[in-house]
Image (cartoon, rainbow, N blue to C red):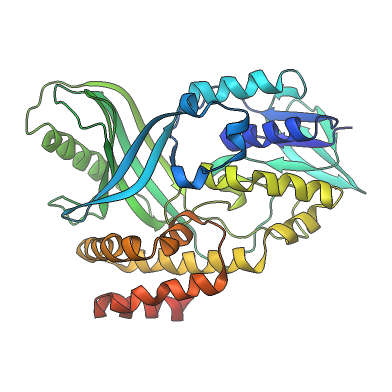
Length: 397
């Protein structure tokens, strides 16, 4: 009998396992995954979100965060911010975690078929007919969804689509900053550029659709065409046969619905657990921040899944989720030019004058409800047409 089974081997799953093994080494763990490989995605974090984080007690910060930049936004004029953004070294993160946890957990490279519950025990059945028994099950299976998590069907689902090239270029690149939103494009297609330098001649350039309803298919051909145009513009129209080191083409959920506490048979973390920064799609820094809370709740409630869910999904978190869904609906209702206008105002006015609002709405930090509501005073100066759309989104939700 296991104490805790973790399904999935992405960064959130392994970091959760790391915390458990370090702080509760007396428990019995099994981690089940289709395959155990180094992470392949580009994971970015907002550095102040990891300030004084527990992970730096066990992982070398300088090795974990290989590049740190100031964030810039182009909407359409360039806006420079003091917000720091870092890129995680996947190879170091993966191997450092495995080295620390050693042989404490059992590793099972298998595909999970279903999860059932009898009495106080959970049974995880795999495709090879192997069954693992546990007192508690955590699922971190990302965008592929969770088998044991049942959701409340309250809100529409949104996704973010992107295509990115990491490439070598002859152009000398400014490595002190990255651009997270570059709206400069002649197209009305609602996508933006995402430009992250790795060194003076290596850069990741992505074309991203900010958000769209998940049942609306993305026009990847248009997205790739705009990416090629952006790369050409970045190289000052010099088509110099850049060396493409790798290509990222994917989609990520911006939200799933809040889990149904009584019907679920596992605790969802990361994307499949709706622990997402809903307006941006970022998950890893938010999950790092809440991993201690989740693990301690499991112990506090003696593996009672329903009580853990209720304690984690507080009124504050559900309120923030609802507000962010309104934000997603609002952005979905905007045209390309309106999105540019909104982000120009947002970063010039709200981020500079109310960093608290930026942290809570964009990064899902913990917050005081009174301070949070007061931070919305800056929105009253939005252009009238945008303010009307926000009010309409609130009414519809």
